[in-house]
Image (cartoon, rainbow, N blue to C red; front, side):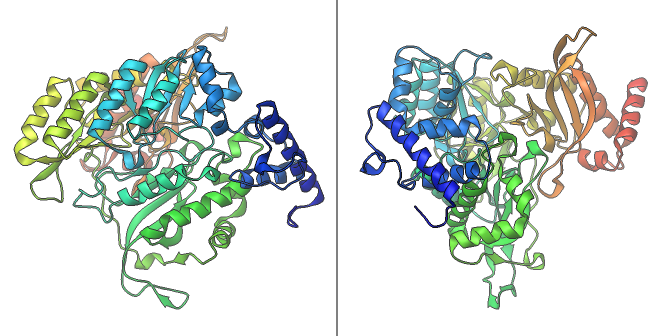
Length: 598
């Protein structure tokens, strides 16, 4: 037993190992580490760091949450055979197994749907056309025949029966894809710049770094079973925002000018990653700049050390407080970064802001339409998807377009759409015509281009409103009545988990059960927030109006946007700038007046 542990911690760990041995024996497995079943050995193997963190929690008087106990009793990666037995019997999981199967990318989403949802892992959001086509086949044969593009540049397949769940996971593996670790207490899909490697504006191609981190995670079991989920993003400072500041770790490409130094040593001028930490918009926080820069080749090592400090010190007693933000809040950045440096065994490089050149400005419409690539004569085509939904038939057409008219890549974005890249000038018209033939387009209204919606109550038990359907209703209503010249993002999320990141929308709507009488009856609806943003405009949206019935939301959104159009200081004033220069009471008065005038 390590001398680093107190007697209480040692007793806990001995009991923990004894319990693990008993659980393994009950499943017909041998003792851990191949040793005798005495149960007194210190934790070992890939789960060692997690067992030690649990031990310190209990020895300090904390009570582990159920999810931590479920991990102790049976690691999800040790339970695949039992999962297949359940599937063969057509049985859906109880809560503890629902948690475990999320390690394999499967979410039982009852009562919204009596079926599984599968979330993939697609590093940097890029997959090959043949993989996209194969995924369409799996969705049609084993699921509901459609997929959703998510706000992590990922794909979800829904309506998967218990019997079909293993077939789908194994079918993904046959395509060279995986869903491993895409749910529960794990590092989620790795995002990167959507137009990485083809964007004339970008400072850095994020694809190799996102891919390296993806494979680092997949091949190290010790990086699974964190205190809570964890998000990492790589932004190359290109045209399309990656929203890296909404992640636990955001690597932001920056250019360091001449003359910078750290601890007496000159820092090479050029492109580095700036490190931002602690983003979690559902908890009212964007990632904050640490002052640290890392060479792109060093990003994986830095991320690994950060995650391991979180593994050791994240809260395992309270799921609400179990994210990296709360370690940073409790410790402060200096203490946390010192622990990261201790884990790395070296100092991290710090650079003053005066040596960091301004980053290129995002184009808020670059994810839609035809855009020139850095490669002469080639273009990317941003395809508009109605709140991220694609039928299997449409997926096959998109795969064929990419293969025959593009470079064979399908690039998913955090804006719930996709890009077809490498399209020669001479084939752009063919791409547009084929998109139209399958019910899609590279053109859409400014409002629809910035419309984001999570699955909502249609497919999620937490959803208080039907977000995707209501988002389309808002778009249909407003497009008939408003002509927008400036981009506006409207985010609809079904619950406090904020999967659609309502706090960073120009307008954000969060699902709510709206009371309609004194008896306590409710109907689906929303609370409305205004003035959120990301990047240079980063800030949390402010509460504007509560308890809006879903059917009333389109008219209210119209009134708010019309108020902006009438009262903005100039045609160039963005909605976020307009909203932030008014107090909420003042803004409400303007909207009410607009309603009366209308």
